[in-house]
Image 1 (cartoon, rainbow, N blue to C red):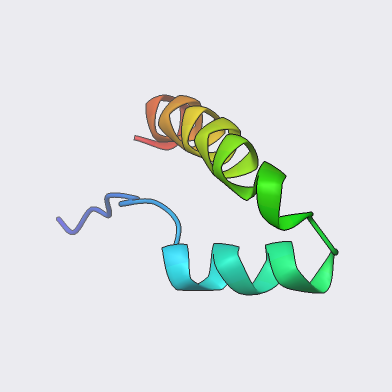
Image 2 (cartoon, helix red, strand yellow):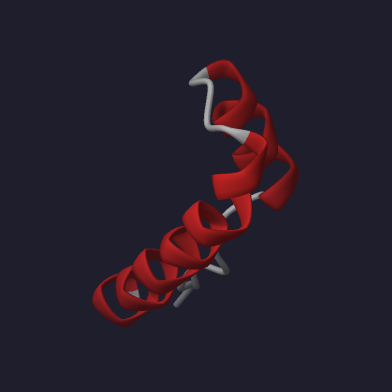
Length: 47
């Protein structure tokens, strides 16, 4: 029986989205850290 495991986000894609949404350069590290927290929580839910 096959199963799947969600590994997480494509971080290159996260950078593109931050640029397109106009996240200021000085805030990108903080926003990225927040996205990683959300990603960790999502892994618990999906897996």
